[in-house]
Image (cartoon, rainbow, N blue to C red; front, top):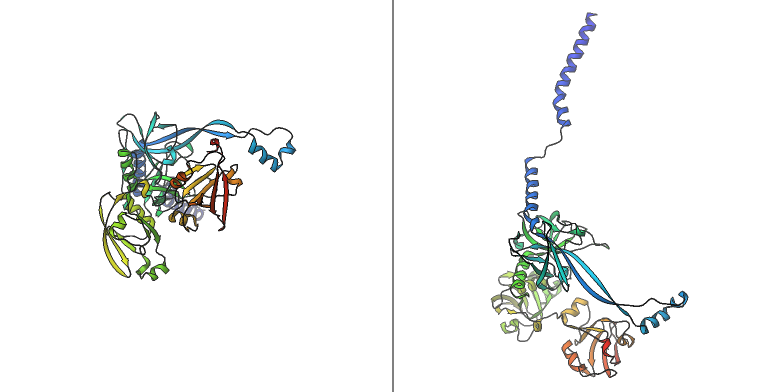
Amino acid sequence: MVRQNSSIKTVVFCGLIVFSLLLPLNMALAQPNKPSAPAIELENTFVNVVKTVKPSVVDISAKKTVTRNVQPNMPYDEEMFNDPMFKQFFRRFMPQQPQREELQTRGSGVIVRSDGYILTNNHVVSNVDKITVTLSDGRSKEAKVIGTDENTDLAVIKIDGDKYPAAELGDSDLLEVGQIAFAFGSPFSFSGSVSQGIISGMGRELGLNQYENLIQTDAAMNPGNSGGPLVNLQGQVIGINKAIATQGVAQSAGLGFAIPVNLVRKVMGDLIESGKWVRGYLGIFMDELSEDKAKEFNIPGNKGILVSKVIEKSPADKAGVKEYDVIVSFNGKPVESARELQNIVALSKIGAKIPVSIIRDGKTINLQVTIAERTDEAEIVTKDTIKKWGVTLQNFTEALAKEKNIEFGNGGLLVVDVDPDSDAFQMGLRKSDILLEVDKKPVTSVQNFNEIVKDKKEKDKILMRARMANGGYKIILFTVPGNKAN
């Protein structure tokens, strides 16, 4: 009995020891894990970034009224009007009815000056009738366009008033892949949203605009983020959100792109001051230096830009640049791609004297070029187009031929589009054809085309010669339609 009681006491005593040892562990497990000091500090930094930047981010709603020609509903029996030939006959000869329609686009913007200047994308506000800006505090104000630039997809708009919270602009030249980034905006109309990620890449190109040197980020972007700011950990704007890359559906796939703020700063200043971006001009056609070409021109490391054409009387021509030269540095900095050099030249100050190093016949030559202002006449890849008689034509340049992978030949006008209901389509003119001659006269530009046909009247005959997209040639006898087809 005594032995039994002693055994019981021993068990109880051991149990108390085990319980006392496990008690702190049980209490620790019962309590939630406390974040470490560095984690709390990082979280506070994120919160402070949002608190700093969010008041300057705005929601933009733009409206435009368009008139569309709508085909009237087909009458009679269903079987007859399901016949493709009859449908084509009906579309051709039944008059279309004009119908007015209001379109609305949504995007974002960021206040960059306390007196109401706002940065956004050109594609958000271009060619619209009314722009409404909603501030972070819920106030709505009508905005006016100060200036837009299609080449960079940037625009500046303004609202009346002052003492608005303006965002601070950073320095995109200091960015490195891996840095933390925040994307602000109104994705799918959810105003005041913010997503966080990193800088995924630099110097990206999407082919959407002429000047691109984009920042890539995995911070989620969706429709409505366009025009909003991309921000660093210091709360500074490092880019303006522009586009996403996705498969099939317009939603985030972790591939967002922003216009770097150093380009934005220059364009913004020019738009505010003069309503347009004042760009530098060199006056050359550029070609990438492949490994084979580098060997041919004896260029070590195939670094540089091959000059394929020098524009007469351009800054490059006056400085002594020649075809087949390889530009290896511009203003003391190595250049490795045509896009990079194009962006550097565009941002150069007008009238600045820039040292340029080239390699010619294996020898290094140092030149000095005086940057001029790029004007409409100085455009290498021209945007001049005309829509006449159901055909949209565009100046055809070597650069455009390379871009569209079309043989340049002797130039001409590129057929950008043909109305399927036009006489031009019936005569056999198609998209990507090259119009070479009109009335047996070579056409070299839209202006030249207009000059040749300016005196043509309805039902006049025009003889055209074109190079087909498949490489063949054709001669078209075109009848000038009435004014309603212009």
